[in-house]
Length: 223
Image (cartoon, rainbow, N blue to C red; front, side):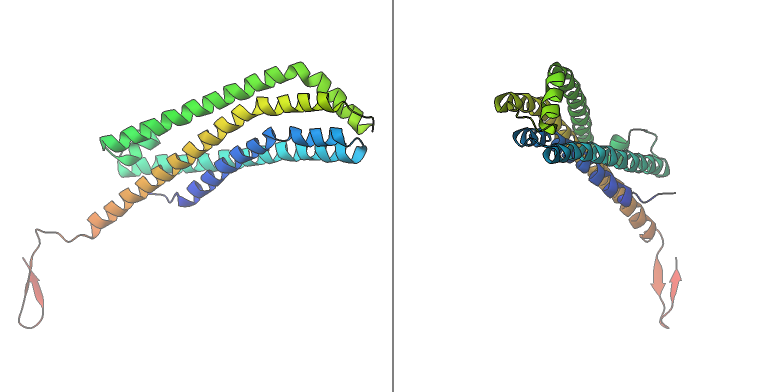
């Protein structure tokens, strides 16, 4: 039985896009800490902390939605391949049929997705490791600002600016990966619905071998 996947595809695309955009926002969260450092006091520090926690919570929520929706879409798309009689377990290639041009495009998209996702994960890990050198200093600056004590503006700009710079490459790569994933989901979904349309057209087409003759009385007789 062929299953509808348009709803799952829409949810997956929205989840993937939201996850990438939230991570991009997280890259700029150090600006909130920099603002708090220039406004010493409990209120500004609490606001910066709330922004940090909200951003990471939003990332976890968006990532969970993206994972569930993409998994549901992939499961249904793979089940449809079996309904179409396609033996391949690769959703992208199996959905577009045997067209060499379409298969080459799908191959390029799949490898671009894998490369950008792997590069993004590597950049995020390297950025986190490099940021550990200043973790203690950042904690001290946050504590001073929360206590209402004046903070060295140049030091705060250097620390939080470096934190932003270390996060940006991974954020940009994840945005690219999400864009490629959205295109891939859209093309696979469109290809599968194209198959369904062709199957329906073939089922509704009249049999050319069956002919009918019109009788004078208005009836027909098949031959």
